[in-house]
Image: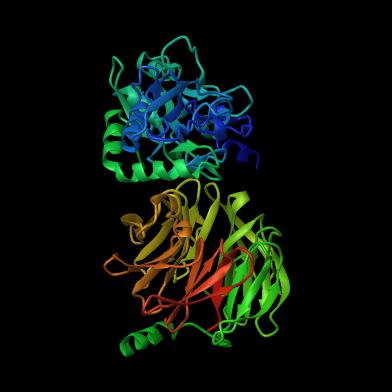
Length: 280
Length: 321
């Protein structure tokens, strides 16, 4: 039962923001409902330094997706930049600074989520040709190798792969990387991928979109293998559907987003492919 | 028409029915009771108080008792059909939702949402014989007709677990759409149909290799995709049609099983949850969770015959015919 607490926690910076319950700010008034000719802006909160998801230069796939949506809805795009870490939702969506966050787990309970627009899993990342090739958390080889994972580490909650390894007694050969990292450098969570490329770890267990994107941008070729099993029994999943998120009571915006996500499936698919997002 | 009826009759001969009162039972999860409807007048003739939050219901093998899972009291209530009273409670794990009885009626499997397990209860002793761990938030439970395979959905992991009953192990995990809910084995036994509530789909899984064959998307005319949230699924007794409730889209989709084409959308009450056919296949009943009523549909014409007020948040339907 102590594991219940970890289920909603997935890695990759997004969810760490959610530890503290957001206060439901009465922010309806702050939404720019300009009466008259032009529709209100599509107000998005995003991390300015978190590729492949988003950055201030609007180079991430979430940037591209909200751009597509703003065009489809004929609404101007407005960003509020905020690092995705503890307090993110409270300080953004629930502070009335924006109406939309582009990527959250579909089962997240603090927000109203749209239809899932992709599903990915954690992956094993290794240098191409390095032996043994890891296919499963249960591989014996994993006990002998240097294994890198992201740690959240400020309130005892941990990433799903850290739990997967811990459950199997794989502890002493695990190297933790803070998912927050050094925010003065570009895309802090990518340090884990770089550690695979430069040989500081033999294998990393990384959230799929992050690993897929940065694996393709290292000096040495890396292999991407979805983890197995995809669920650990009991009740720990390494596969997540991802949705856009709005405030819990914003059913109208959710319905508009769902319409666009449904009618633009192939364009969305193409964007995800362009960013090497491994999907299941 | 006559041929259809005869086909329907052929389908049902193997099932025991001891009483044939024709009564229609609707579980109401918020008013903590079961509405009992007369099949001819379609009026509520009795309300049976139950333990808190009654949801999924099943007959025992002799069809003289109804079992109903009561999620907020962690029990399955047993109701005697002759007296229409709760006669005992079977303890389950926490928050039982859906369950299925074994083919010999001596045991049942129940999903315990907050424990992330499926419990196996021996009905002779009323004891939990063993529990099988599942993915997060297990929900729908379906036993194959031969009793050898159990299908359990995990809402959070987007999966259908395929459980080998004899060895008590999960032999496959099938990833389907978002928030899988209910499953049903197709009439010929070759397929498993599963609803995925948040992605608005029904998945058809081949039972021989546990691979997805097709996914069906729904969008009733005039509705928005955000509202299409399928949950309940019921096979017509003639084996030709699947009725799929579409949740916030307030419709039931009628899907031809052979062609997998959507043949009709029928407007019902608010947030339809579960659906059930009468044994003769003439009528389809739909429990509407947000309008607190039961829609009665003429299954041949797709025309709504009547809406009947029941308890609060009606959930499941069981017909003693």
